[in-house]
Image (cartoon, rainbow, N blue to C red; front, top):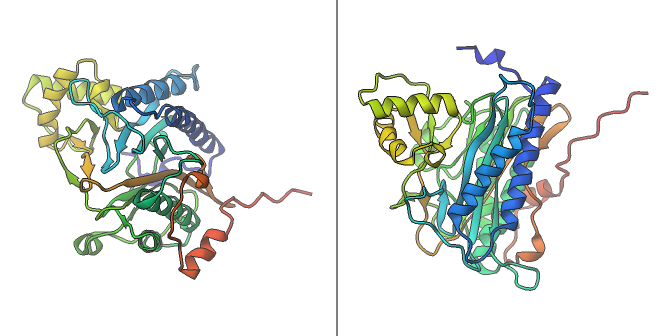
Length: 368
């Protein structure tokens, strides 16, 4: 195992270039999927399209370098309304059909040479300037947008992770909404989507005791994930099957042949990156093979979580590079405030002031 000190960082220009290439790809594919969010559209088809496009676009990078790995870093998930995250159904599982007024969260990631860019964006199907989002839906949407804007301005070397935790909670409160309890934003490292440092949102008492505080440092990279619900912000599993998994660092001698075959294919095809069972050649075999791997913690599941029926959950996730001239946000699409009408606003003077500050990195000083 290489000591983490030796992992390449964004102090190296080539690493920055690779992050930006990954980011350009996820932004491009995200835009395509947002445009494809239409009433009567299939969530499964959207997920399949997202993964197909991420694979095509990453395939175009560094073609001459056969050793360099690239591809999906987080499979496309499309979670609707009170579904919080990780919904991307298999071809054998029930689909969800989008309808006007549905709140759709699109979540995905790509990597070039293990340098990961992730993104998540929320759209309300059929929302326009003439027909804006209103009510609890608009509150959750605006709160998620502003909380992620505030978080971006706080991801700075020397700041502590809990500053973001507290600010996201205050923004949620201003809009009568709750951040989804215990959700984590992770530091990103080469080939590692769940790096050591994390930012927790809305921790329970138990989580608050267990969860460490971290300080941001120069040349780190983070995936900052904000999820805000008009409901009670409590995620629970329902009957939706888990389809997204990733390999862990653990070892164990698997007993079943199907499990061993599955594990070896995952290691070859995806390495340490999260993947969808749908992307395996034989979905049926994969469904059998994954069970023993999960039992013995060789593979970890990404649970499909739901808030209560009738709740609306909005999500914005972006990737940010902590550069010497300030935090540099490389993923995410613009938020269209004209299509979102809420009666509520932020009263907190400190947060208002924070949101007024520029989030653009300072221009590098011109050399005379």
